Image 1 (cartoon, rainbow, N blue to C red):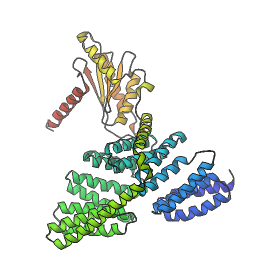
Image 2: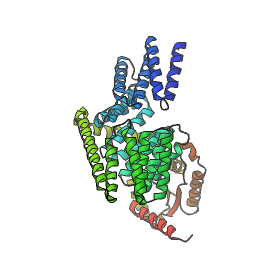
Image 3: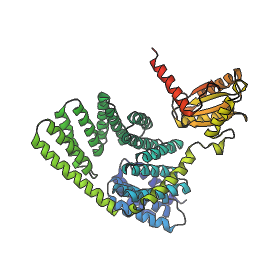
Image 4: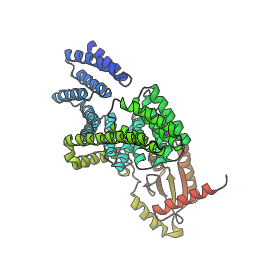
Length: 498
């Protein structure tokens, strides 16, 4: 590599590192860098500069410019004898169309990005594409699909220890959970995101975590805790000058004041939110409609019919503008006609990627059997009554990633006469060809292995899994009975005096 190429590469890396903090300056410098790359006939550097200009323009909401440069990047990439940046190029096409509410075109490009990233071994862009596809499904009200896709993104990001991508995936997952009305689970997911963002320079992500936390706490009726979370989101958004996040935090604070019976203070927050939304850099018709609707409701409660009427007029105007905009964008979205084919292809790709990240017994462990076969063996051994030489060990934890590790460790202790299976995402079942003292010793050994296992090296910080040894004759006949038995034991434990 020549000195000029090395210097150019170092410049591009510096610009990439500054992109989030200063997109405007990066845009200017990237144009200068692009001229140098073209002068040196350095195609790789030219592509990287075009991607930088695209990202900077997108962050500055200059969507026409960003689309112009990403198309130039695609033309250049297609003229080369490699596809090194093709997955990235498809991803940024998708991001731009997403901003324009052309969701099916965005979906089409994210599918292409997902497919290409699998060929080019580009895990970060693969995760970005999963995040995008999940968001398309959420905005088109396919909430369960969105949740499943974002859960896969969390797992994929965790597997490569990419804290920012995992945090973003968790934030999007919490959004899916909100629409599914699973508020306690939202808080758990957001706590994980918060832990990951402790040393991240992008404080707007942290503000999003606090805002979603406030929303979840409000739904759970924890008004004081919600107020603290909303204030934290507002403070971060104010410090780091995110108009959009500040608007959302103000809306949460207005809702809190309304629940406390402070209508004047609620109106004050809504007026501030209105002011910020009007000067936001994004299309604000949807959020302004929500603000004016709430203003109208409060004014009506206070008996101020004139203000209620004016606010309602604004609400109607902005809600109609939003609907017209969405309808127009959908009408111009050429990919909408192939919606079904797109979704089918996306599901196939996602299932293939899920297979890489989820436990697959057929490929890895000789003593693993299917869940159905395991239950059949259990019933057969039960019929031997006291002549049976088998016992059952069940390992349980509510995190499937921890159960993956438990499965590996359990398999190392198993023999050819044992039967091991995943009973569910939370349980491993182990039929061991031992009973009495030998079975108890094996159970203690497994418990000790799980205790000393370095969970933090897998990016997991948790309560230890439970390991329970049971007599085969006393063990339930079905998973449903096993789960019911566990629930009953937990209820009894909660009922015990401290």
